[in-house]
Structures are given as structure tokens and as C-alpha cells.
Length: 164
Image 1 (tube, rainbow, N blue to C red):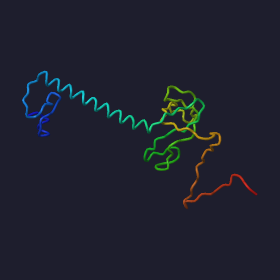
Image 2 (cartoon, rainbow, N blue to C red):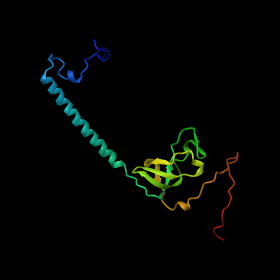
Image 3 (cartoon, helix red, strand yellow):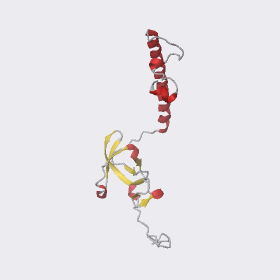
Image 4 (tube, rainbow, N blue to C red):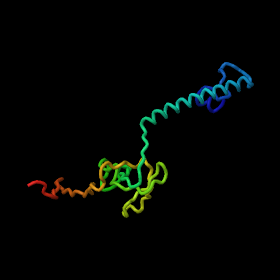
């Protein structure tokens, strides 16, 4: 008994054994021709399935193209329990501050101008890790950390008087 038969209690239907179970046909040109026809049918089915899946993915995907000197946000992957950019867990940011694109390396790869504190990070990123900044990046203000005391309150400091 073959290992497949012992595990599954039936014969293995390999391409050579695609004939009906009750038959005891000799391996000949008819059997080879039948196997080749079945392989052709399987290839057609796989091709149609792939085209269906491609049509579904083409609808949801979009081609992102950035120009030199565009500003983009960089996507960071949240990892549970790891503190990144001052926040941990659910509150960790998905995208971090805007960076300027220096040159385009390939159609889907861009090089970013990173600050000196991120000198250990490789500056080349795939397009799926970038998100276009909408608006003027010079208007984006850095967010300072808010100090929360043990009563879970903080002291608000006025920045400017807007109306008299």
C-alpha cells in the first residue's frame, strides 16, 4: 500500500492515474493524450482565475507618482508594545512628519531627505510607504509633548491673543 493510500484510504490520482478508477488500462498514447488534454484544461482554468483576480486588484490599486521636491508622510508600522515617536500601542502614529523627496530612484522607489536624528535609517523607500502631503508643509507645526500630572490634567499655556 502506498503512503497516500494508507493516510487517505483511497488511491492517489496522479496525472498518470486520471483514468476512471475501475479501469485497468495500459499506459499508452490514449492515456497520455487524455492527460495532456486535462493539463490544458487546468491551465485554461488557472489563466481565467488569474485574470479575475487581476481585475479585482486593479480596481482597488492606484498608481502613485511623486515629483522631486514633493512632500510626503512616511508610514510607520505599529508594533504592539513598542514605543515609537513618543506614543505606544493604539495611539502610535501611522504616518510621521513630512519629508521632502530628493530624487526618484526607480518608478516605485523614492529617496527622502531625512533629518540628522534619523541618520541610521536608510533613506530609500517604496511608494506604498509614502502618503502625499495635502497643503503647505511649511504650515505644519511640530507637536510638543503634553505633560500630564498624576490627576490626569495638564496646564494650558496661551500662545497668542487672537481677539480683544
